[in-house]
Length: 422
Image 1 (cartoon, one colour):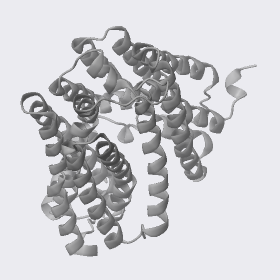
Image 2: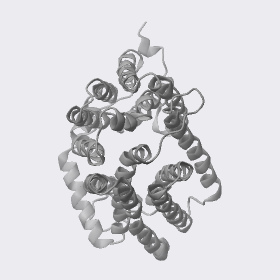
Image 3: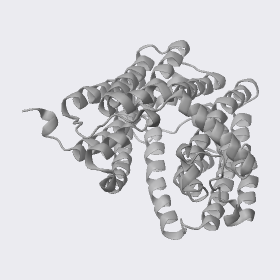
Image 4: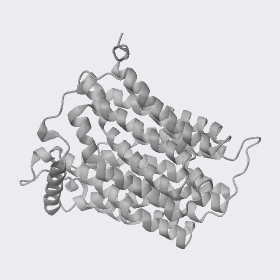
C-alpha cells in the first residue's frame, strides 16, 4: 500500500510544523556561539553571513516560487528541505567564513522553495475553509518543536558544537526523505498563468506600489517602520552572542557545561513569548487601529531601551535580564505588526502593500546590517548594539504619526491601481 495514502495531510502538516523547528533549533540554539568560538568570525563577518542569506532569499523568491505554483507544492517543499539541511551540514563540516557564506546562499534558496509552499499545500489538501484552525495548531506545534530542539542542542553541544550543527542538518535532510514517502498531494492544481510568480508580476507590483505611494503618502510610514526594524533586526540577531561572550564569562551551572545557558536563553524566550502574546491577545483590542498602534509604539520603545541597556550592561545579571526583555518584545512585534498592517490597508491593495512591506524589511536588513557590523568590527560591539537599538527610534516617530492620523491612515484602493495586483 502506498504510504502516502496512510497519512492524512493534517498529520503530515503537524509533523512538518513541529519537526523542522525541532531539527533547526538543534543548530540555531548554538549557531552563533559556534561561529564566534569555533570559526572566529568578526562582528562584520557575522552580519555579512546574515546579509548574504537575506539577499539570496530576496533574489530567488520569484524563480523558486514558480516550482510551487506550476509543478508541485510537495516537490517545492522537499527540495527546500534537502537544500536547507545540506547548508547546515556544510557549516559544521567546513567551518570557514567562505564556506559559511556559500552555505547561506544554499540556505536562502532552500528557504524560498519552502516559503509559502507548505501553507499552500495544506490549504490545497484540506480546503481553504478548513485551514484556519490548522495553521493555529501548526504554530503551537512549532513552539513545542523549538523547545525540544533547544534541549537536544544543549545535550549535543555539551559534547561538541560541531556535532550539534551536523546533526541538525542531517535530521533536516532525513525529514526530506521521509516526506518523499509520506507526503500526499491530491488537491494541487497548477496556478493559472496570470497568478503565477514571475518577474513580470514583481514589476507590476512595483508599478502599482509606486502609484499607491503617490496617492497615499501614509504608506511611507509603514515602509519606513519596516525598513528601520529590518536594520535593527540584523544587527541584534547576529551580534548579541558575540557581545555576551566578549564581555562576560558564562557561569557554570553545577556539573553542566556553560553552553547550557544558550539552551536556557532559547527556551526562556520561547516561553516568555507565548505568555506575553497571550497577555496581549487578552488585553489589546486587535480590531482597533489606535489600540494596536499604541501597543506597538510602547513595545518598540521598550525594545529600543532594552537593547541599549543590554549593549552597555556592566553585570551579567543585567545583561541576561535585558536580553530576555529585548528578545521577548521582538517576538511580540511580529504578530502585532501583521494585524496592524492588515487593518491599515484596504483589501483591494492588501497584497501589494504586504509585498512592499516585506521588501522594505529585507532592504533594511541588507542595507543596514553591514553598517552595524562594521561598527562592531572597527569601534566596538557595545557601540554596534547601541546603534541597533537607536535605529528603532525613528520608527517611534512614525508610529506616533500613524497614531495622530488615526483611522484616516487607512490605505484604500485608488483609481489607477489595478485591484488584481492588490
